[in-house]
Image (cartoon, rainbow, N blue to C red; front, side, top):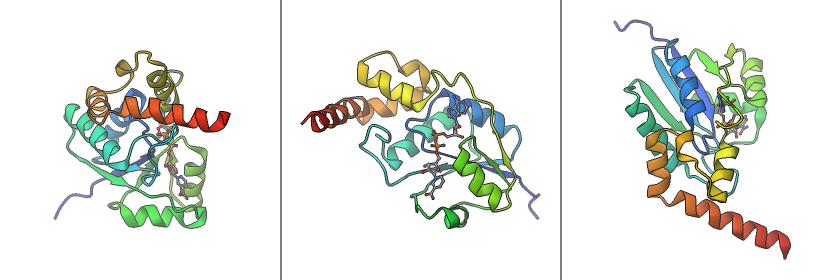
Length: 179
Ligand code: NAD
């Protein structure tokens, strides 16, 4: 018989996955046998808030975690269902069984707590710079951003021309707004 394993679930949009997310995973992985990463809002891409597809985010995260020497993880893309009352059941139907949930997102925390899960907070790591919004703004304005993300993430963004995509969609957006 296999020994009882503790699985922890972390959900985020990871637009993009950055060093703050990686620090959270380093902390969590000391407290569980198996990590499940839910790639949230999987249906969204090609906008300023959500520039990268679920597949691109999957590649970024798997490269970053393999480079960390991790192999005990599952990456599960999750489409939003926008029916908050049943969202936790939707998530649970997609991922392997889990005991612990980690999130700082107030809505995610509330929904899991109301469903009877104990939700743990992960400490925030230098949120001013390790933030998806900050990294996307830097990409658009041509500032340095690669040092804020794991190497495999920067490689993936360059490979899919994600930096140029972000610049282009933001230009298109500002043109629409001024017309
Ligand atoms: P995110 O990528 O911004 O953050 C993921 C996690 O990492 C969060 O807990 C965040 O606090 C943490 N984090 C970010 N920067 C950090 C740093 N520097 N140091 C430490 N921790 C850091 O993703 P998010 O917006 O929280 O994603 C929540 C997902 O859940 C979304 O996709 C949302 O759509 C989904 N959701 C969907 C429904 C629904 O469809 N009904 C309901 C609730 C949530």
